Length: 254
Image (cartoon, rainbow, N blue to C red; front, side, top):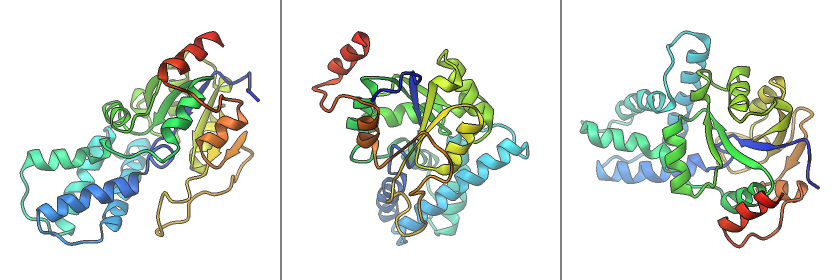
């Protein structure tokens, strides 16, 4: 049934809404073939992702000045092109390859599940990805956000409390009226600390065989679901939506 205290759902994106690992490996394999480089492209994706976490940690600690995720990805990519022995590549082509993170595929349930949730709640991203990246990704993967929210708007990366609190403010709501939906226990614990409601949605294939994902809650989260459709069922959202206009109509009626 509908949780009347919740007015908006905000979503972690990388891993929760989109399959970053498979999407990056696919694009990297094409890029590598173009330059006659043979590699384990799943590992390449993992190596690239590793720079994302370390880069944000340095920013939040004050070791580095503020930089958006596109910059963090590019700094890591420059190192990886040398590590994987790529030849010299023109700047325009390297910059375009760095935008691979703007072109990530959603999980099979993502668009339909988000549309169902949108019929009852305001839905928005709340990702460490920068606004331009998330906007382009939404167009690419058909993610029907009501708003694109990002840690960029707070000047702090999750799991810093201000990354959650500032974006809640931008929605004109109180933390208790907003629920973070994420596939990662650490993100959800950060949201709990900031006063938000929480829902763990499992993504068992996020890391392939390289890492065990979070398949069970490690804290007292409000909801636990196997995918977005399961969460929509638990929240009493309609089973079937004909189109986006119908979803908007339902939101206005409610």
